[in-house]
Image (cartoon, rainbow, N blue to C red; front, side):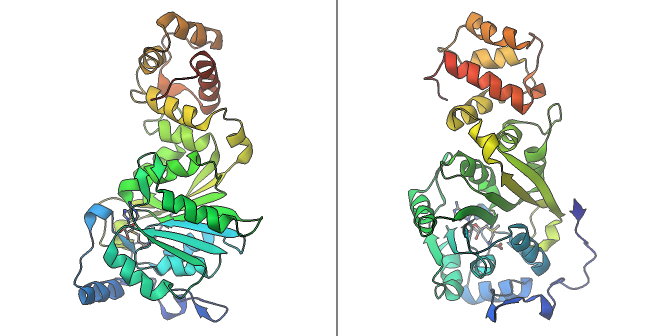
Length: 329
Ligand code: SAM
């Protein structure tokens, strides 16, 4: 894990002319520098919307790092949540088979269209990427499915500088989808990245850590200070790379059950596991039925939820599911 050099002298540091990479003679995108954004926003009479998590990545070297970490080639269908000005989108389009990009903000959709409309491997959607917390919008799912069906060797990759307010549902939903993603590279809050890679007993360990680690290998590629974005967010950020492990994923009996059960028992992760399971399974399992599951697993009455590793949680979920198959949150 590296920390970015924050010793910047000019406001568009890292944006030297030779950073505007070319690919086969095609320009990969606009140069999304701070001065570019300020000028375009002024021309359009708009300001960045905090409620939509609009913090644009203005360091072109870091944009390149995201593109490189995704290791795109002509088999890949990229899903990007948050088109912004289309700067990253164009770079994905120059390397991947197809890109589906979603933007909620009409002004930005318009701005990005100037750059992207002529690219026939880009599908632009102007809408909320989420139908609700646990589901992507159906239009997004359809667009991705259509691109995936164009060739048999297609691979799905989420690559995005995510709006921070929806980063958790976007990453979680990718792993709930029956369309298994190949990998995800995303810019998210550092605090969220820490939770994704956290181990049992640590204060960051929770339902998200379990959900990610049960089906993928996750690493923090780079920690970034607020200054690499415009406008600067209040917190540090990180680029994470999540490589899905199909074998681990296949070992999960029922993805939705596992997702919901882990969420339910980790609401009070420092409490005793027994109390959490009893509360989660209320009206489905009695206390003695819960004990009949925990005791043979060697989970003593003073075991706390935060100390369970992923393997134990998988085993526990399968036993609970066998006893209460109809349960849901
Ligand atoms: N991709 C650009 C970049 O790298 O600079 C923009 C990233 S910015 C962090 C997040 C973008 O997501 C913004 O353009 C914002 O309007 C958009 N956005 C926020 N919430 C969204 C949602 N629910 N669905 C789709 N787009 C959303």
